[in-house]
Length: 201
Image (cartoon, rainbow, N blue to C red; front, side):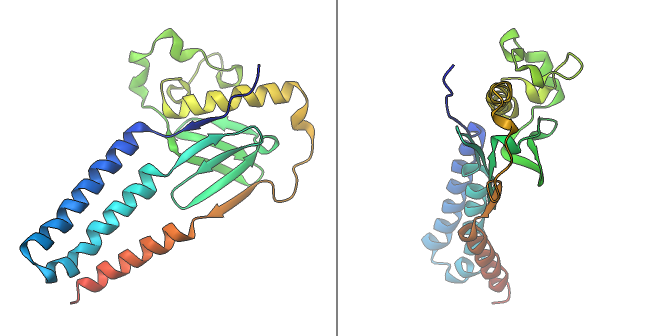
């Protein structure tokens, strides 16, 4: 079966981001409307920081399952994980890829709670063979969960590559790499510093 790339982003996180940005904009607009310049200088930075944090934490993170690698975009960095670098795919707390450089957790794919099992349908448990531990699956492996949907897509392609012998080759230097997000880090640090400075004005 032909491989289908896929991206996983929680809809709840994007909705929450919109709500938080609306609150931040309303807060800043309130100072502007009443002409409270001092209040804007003191507290406007914190509203801006709240909006940027929401974008960094809930809008931008994603998991991209590509033909050559899995990209895990977290708030402050992105991991590029080649298929032959994946040793274990876990979903205990979130989608987690175990690699030669350690465990990589996906912020965009949290696991479901234990009570998810009471609302499952038979379709939710049709997972790949490597998802079953001692014949059972975890709540985070169910297809209705953020972690389970991403993990199932990754596992099925990983199992196919394993069976085809594609994963037996050596890991190329630099293929498994982490890229930091300097713009996000600098903006968050600058807004935090400006907010702190506002308190002493």
